[in-house]
Length: 325
Image 1 (tube, rainbow, N blue to C red):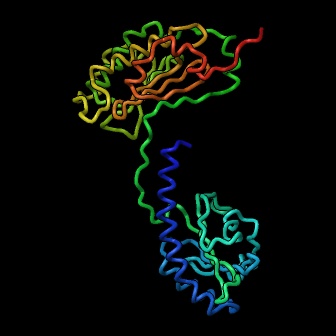
Image 2 (tube, one colour; image 1 turned 90 degrees about the vertical axis):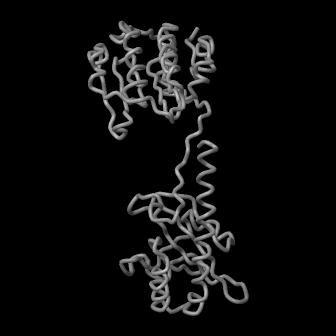
Image 3 (tube, rainbow, N blue to C red; image 1 turned 45 degrees about the vertical axis):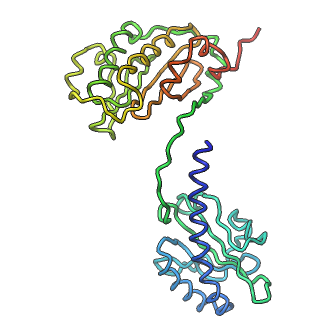
C-alpha cells in the first residue's frame, strides 16, 4: 500500500477513534450499575443505540470475553449470540492486553462479508479490577467519516506482472498486429480525439488492435474502437467537437509527443516491447504495459524525459528472468 493511501486511512482512523471512544465511554456507568442483570443490560444497550445511529451491534462480554447479552441491533435483540466466546477474535487482542479503548483494523464481517470495524471499551470496577468489555460493531459504509476523496500519487509506480509471462519473455517475439501496419495514422487520430473531441482518457491495445476511450461528456461509459474504426478518420464525426479543457494536466501540444513515444516503445525490440499504453490528460498520467507484463504509471513529462535505453534496461522493465544458458 502506498504511503499516501496509508496516510489517508490513518487520518480517518484517528478521527473515528476520538469519536467512538467518547461515545462508548458514556455507556460505562450504566453498564456497571446493571452488571449481572442481563435484561437490564440489554435495555441499556437498546437505549444507547438511539444515540449511536451509525452502530450496527452492541453487546457485553464478561472478563473472559464470553458474551453475556444478546447482540443489540437497531431491529431488536439477536439472542443467538449470547454465550459466544470472542477471545480469539482479532479485534479483542488489544482490549485483552489492557487497552482502555481499542479500534480494530478493518475486516470482512463473518455473516454479511462487508468491510467492518469493531470498537471495544474495557469496563472496570471502582477498584480497577476488570469487569468485562463493551463491544460495538460498525459497517464502514455507515460510519461518520469525513469522506475526503483519496488522491492518487503521481509518483512513478512500477509493478511486476505474471511470472509465467516474464519467464518466457526471451522465448517469444513481437508479431506485427493490424494496428502496427497503420500505427502513425491511428496515433494521429487518437491524439486528435483527445485534443479536439472531448476524449480525456485513451488506452491503445497495440497487440489486439483496439482502443478504449473515455469522454468528458460521458465519463461513466467507455467506448471500444476496433481496427476498422481506428483506420477511418471519419470516426471524428461521431464525437462532438470540444475545446481542450483548461484543467488538463498536460498541454494540448504535448499530447502527440506522448503517442509518438508509444510508437517508439512498440518497435524498440523484438522481445521487449509495448503491448498497451494510455494517457489521461486530466491527471497527466501515462500507463504502460510491456511484453514482460510489467506495468508502469508516471507523469507525462517524466515519461517524455526517458530515453529508449532506459526502457530496454532490465531493471526498469521489471523483467528479471533471463533465458537459461
